[in-house]
Length: 500
Length: 77
Image (cartoon, rainbow over all chains, first blue to last red; front, side, top):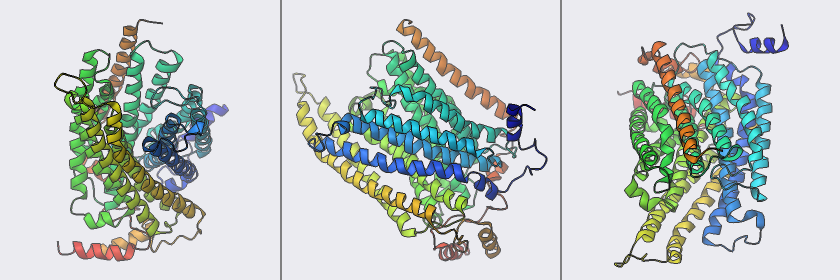
């Protein structure tokens, strides 16, 4: 057998008679341990780095003198470094860990050749590091969400393919006939992200499209990164952890399936709503608006499902660190998505476009929904992979409250401030001239921008608590304190005995 | 290379292809019988190691206390 062929057959669990096909969850967790820990460690480091850039960018908006003489921290660079460190460093690393882990568990297949995953993960993070340094040294592009110098794209694309393919392989060799809704979400996301990334890179940098088609491609990409990459993984995680932790199935599985398919069929068009009023064909904008408003269907469906699964279980939800974060994220998903559909309407968009409202909305989706869900997932995964309990309940609570209050302040500040900003910019005198000068609008915005810096400090404290806790757990003693643990088989059996 | 509206056709084709793959997956799922027993499908996440009806996650050090409280709350119903 050629080496390549024998490699491929070694991936198939049925190819080797010696290996039992059906595996225990704990074995799957074990097989995912090293790659997941690598991704999560990188993710947590990027989270802290990204917070630093966020704080710098936020403070500069209301106190422009801050670090004004440091050329690699000008506002444009710090803001782009923040976005890319968070999106490609934190979010993607967290997605790799969480989605592959959930996928392997639901497919009931242990991951073989985890070494490849580790190498690909190292290359991914090298790519992101080069990209962020490129941004800080002034090599950034002017394309939002793709600011990294285009030269790193091949590294990222190639290492992504080596990572994402493991989700597909796990799916291919799944042991259960039924494909659970989280598997659909994650499998779809793993296909969608390279599709988006490669087409955007090609049509904007490698073989640039002419005219406003570049802008259309840009927003098709940027919006779909949220809607077809972060969102499906976040929802997949909610649909897995919410029923799993509560120990009761999802309220209406039928609705969750409906939600997935309506997202898969219609979301793709929504991104054009970022160009409402722009010089592109009006039918395209209208199609984008229709798709955005149609998103109300999967959002309401998901909201009903999440609500009725958690309702009546308030104590159980509150007693679990995982569910505190996940339910916070699920509630934010509903709100953020309904806001998003509203903002796509022309009459609303005329106020919110080019204001801080949009920035607030982006954080609503990526932070209050997606990032909170990832925190919850990590709190569930880590004890099971390491056979060890989190060292400190107090640090988890600190993390939760700092993040919940911090993001709350930011959302109120940016939504209200952004709305005021939009109204002031649109306000006309009776003879049809703008009522306020641009500078007056900027001055009116300062207190709201300041509130964002306050929230940034809170969020950073939460992130540092998480960082310390994460590495404390990694370095902690190797004793499994399963008596207190939520995690282990022994504990579940004990619980079952009690219930009976 | 092309006129700008030619790129518009390319991007519309890409979006159309995207839609087509989603439709193909949906057709596969229906034919495969994925939607035939949703009640059972919803329970496919539970197994012997993490069974249905057992809360799986608590704050470290609070598991026994919280579990007792939950039991107490559920008993009357």
